[in-house]
Image (cartoon, rainbow, N blue to C red; front, side, top):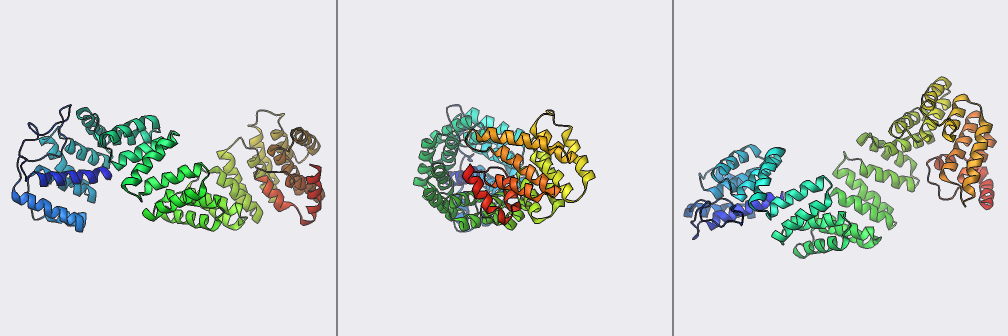
Length: 488
């Protein structure tokens, strides 16, 4: 928590500074902002030399050891100094001891109700406890006391960012940045929201500002990579992202981007390695498995693609496209039971796509279960309102196992209509596949091959049935495919 780190630093500075000539009261003569709120972490009216010496010991422990080492020092040092207690609460919170941190912070708040540093500490504790009511209560008071407060405006920006109100989030982050131009969190918020609102020049400026402070800042490098990638400068994007990973080697998002840029550069092995690394970093999130599956499909590594799609639905059961691919690969493997289940699930997720019930019905027919084929297809047919549509006619043909001539004429008309515009549409290609499959299931191999060939002749196919047609087309059909291509 960056605000917490700053709070600890402020409390530590206050403890050290209070041993000098500063002896004024927080509530009367301490420096206040324009609205009357005390800017600094609460200080006692004076600090003893021993308090200052102890604060220096804590500082040394933090610099040379760990938070636990610093906290251990408090075990043998009793103090009522406000700044030291603020420091202790911050360290406890940072170490995960929310209960004890809360106890100290609540006591400090009673004694210093308008101290912004104490309010920030209490706000962080409430946030850690998922107490939104108290967190907002402290946040609103901070902003009331100091409308330009950096940490408060960052928190407001974070809230609006989560709500995807990016313009308002940007406004808050800019207020924070103008209040403290060196604050990296404010700069990153400005850059990220500028990126989300398509203000690429501003985004680039903020990220470069961050790099001037910290040349290997992973967040800035990552987003500069995204910007280069969106401009199709994939080599620059690749380089930025590798630098980001060098600074933050366990960043899931960076590995996802690295895989994407590697793929665009033709570095398929590196793309695979990047997305595999992402699955190691977060094995429970589905996206890297989906990207791997797509890569394996592109490389025609069918078995690897199948296994990756299985992982996708394990991690995200609502990702219907993965069910489509599992159905496709299971069909290829001859596992019609799993293929049917996958296509039925895909149909539930996307009921407007007739391909899924057609494939599920075909799976039943492959299993010689005509009764279930009729029952399932009938349940779908009843939900199709347009009984004259080609979707309805095609599924009706599978259901009745007759009526193919009417469907052939309708498909040919759709094919000819799309061909008149210069190419056969993906939708027409899909219907041609289901004609081929129908005849294949009926045992009419030559007629099935005729339509498989027509499907395979389609240029730039964007429908999954094309791959099924390629797998179904026999080797001796290649000459016919070439003839069809010439005719096109």
